[in-house]
Amino acid sequence: MGLFEKMEQNGYEQVVFCYDRPSKLKAIIAIHDTTLGPSLGGCRMWPYKSEEEALTDVLRLSRAMTLKAAAAGLNLGGGKAVIIGDARTDKSEILFRAFGRMVESLHGRYITAEDVGTNVWDMDYISTETRFVTGLVTSKGGSGDPSPFTALGCFQGIRACLKETTESNSLEGRTVAIQGAGAVGYHLARYVHSDGGKIVVTDINKEAVQRVVDDFGATAVEPDAIYDVACDVFAPCALGAVINDKTIPRLKCKIIAGSANNQLEEDRHGDELAKRGILYAPDFVINAGGLINVYEELERYNPERAKQKVSQLYDAIRNIVFAAKKKNISTNMAATQVAEERMRLLREVHRTYVRRN
Image (cartoon, rainbow, N blue to C red; front, side, top):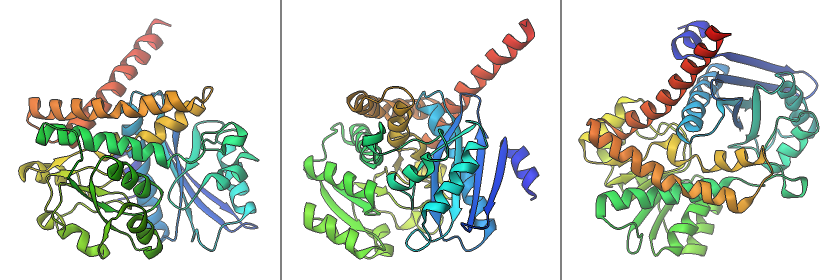
């Protein structure tokens, strides 16, 4: 399928390929939908094996951002950016400033933020070239690292799912298997531990795993073994597409609730989880905490207000589960319908306004 055919089929508005020779920047910005407002989404830096792989990732991620913003009730559209490179060796001031100029050239249609492979200091470089960046350091009026807010939303989503399956939202004595011990995974482990939960953790980064083991008494397992862990909750907090035909038969959990984007390799895997009696918290709802937090930067940032809004994801997940049961559909489908209905209604309002004027 050609690029324009993909864009037409899935409703993408714009895909921008960015290249800067002096900095060796190779990036792609995808704007999926701006019905609800300007697109906002993080900038991921990853050593993709090919340009095609990078394009596939940014398209999937930007569409997920549209659904995330719509389901969270934010006045934002969906966008995402990827920089092709190794975050451990390829970062530089001139690279991020070059990327900032690319963002500025879109005149606010896309607002960037940190993501896998980037951080608040990278956003600082980007901000020297564009106004359209969030997740800045607190000394510059930003909200800082959004990962604690993403983890808080994930924790609230886990509690909501436990309430549905056990009639108690407490993690006391419950086991959570966390896949990914990075920034979000670490903070999620902290929340689980503080609520009395037991933690099994894995990551390709052994130092990150050891930190969770040392700080929260977690049990470490090898990356591939996490799918076989007997647990109450499986929390994917790394990369996407981990729920697929190969992993689903191995899962020994009642709940899947994590922060990773695009956890389902295909939408049909949401239906398969439902058939197996596994409650899935749709990723683009449960992981919206970071987006909600940086959205607050667009006004006068207030961390307590941001925390309160992120905590409301508990009710959002509960409502999605209720809608799925009422319609006898998967939770993933129910969440998608909620997001798409909000966008449909606003498009109708726009069309009515245009006709009248």
